[in-house]
Image (cartoon, rainbow, N blue to C red):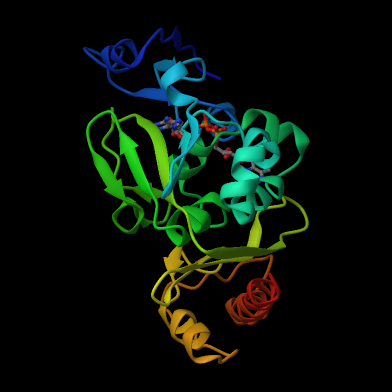
Length: 262
Ligand SMILES: Cc1cc2nc3c(=O)[nH]c(=O)nc-3n(C[C@H](O)[C@H](O)[C@H](O)COP(=O)(O)OP(=O)(O)OC[C@H]3O[C@@H](n4cnc5c(N)ncnc54)[C@H](O)[C@@H]3O)c2cc1C
C-alpha cells in the first residue's frame, strides 16, 4: 500500500477543508471497500479524511413522515435499532443481511451508497424508499443519486450527512446471496405508499440499482410475472443474466407475499 496522510476530522467543515490544496483525497468511513481497494493498488489516495466520528453523521431519528439515518451509521446499528424496526422493519432486515458480522460492525450506510456497488443492498432500500440524500451542499433524490456502475451524483469533495427515507405503509426486502461474498446475486425491495403508490427497486441484476417499473405495475394489478428486459444485465462467473432475471422474479413474488401477509 502507498503512503498517505490520515486526517481525523473534528467537524464537517474540517472534513471538507482537508480537500483544499490536495488532489486525490478520499473520505474514509468503515473502510470495508476503500481499504481493500487501496491494498490491491486499485486506488492510491494521498489523503484519507476519517468521518466516522462526526456526530452530525450519526443521526438516527424518526419523524411523522421520515426515518433519518446518518451516513456513518454502521449496518449493525440499523439492523438492531428499535426505532428502525418500528419505522421501516424491511430496512432493518436489509441491514441485517449485509455481509458478515465484521462487515456489519464497520460498514456504513454512507460508504455503501457512495460506493454504489451494483450488487449492494442499501441502494435498493434507498431507491425503493424514495429516499433523499442530504449532503453538506444539497439534497439529492435517490432517483438522481445513483447514476450507474459504481457511480453517483456526488462531487469529489461532497460529504453525505444523512439519508431521509420516506416511511412507507408497508415494505419488504428479499435477497438471494452470492455464496462467496454475501452480496446480492439479486435483491428486490418493494414499498407501498398511500394512494396506491408502489416502488420496486432491484439490485444485483444490472449495472446499477434501478426502479423496476414493470414490477410496480404488476404489483398494482395483482400479477406475479413482470417483464425484466434491460441492456445492462449482469452476466458473470457467478450467474448468467437469465438466471439473475429469474431469481429477481422469484424475489418479487416473495416480497409481494410478505407484504400481503403483513
Ligand atoms: C467481505 C465483505 C462482504 C460484504 N458484503 C456486502 C453485502 O452483502 N451487501 C452489501 O450491500 N455490501 C456488502 N459489503 C460492503 C460493505 O457493507 C460496506 O457498505 C461498503 O464496503 C462501504 O461502506 P464503508 O462504510 O466501509 O465505506 P468505505 O469503504 O470507507 O468508503 C467507500 C466509499 O464511500 C466514500 N464515502 C464514505 N463515506 C462517505 C460519506 N459520508 N460521504 C461521501 N462519500 C463517502 C469513500 O470515500 C469511498 O469512496 C461487503 C464488504 C465486504 C468487505
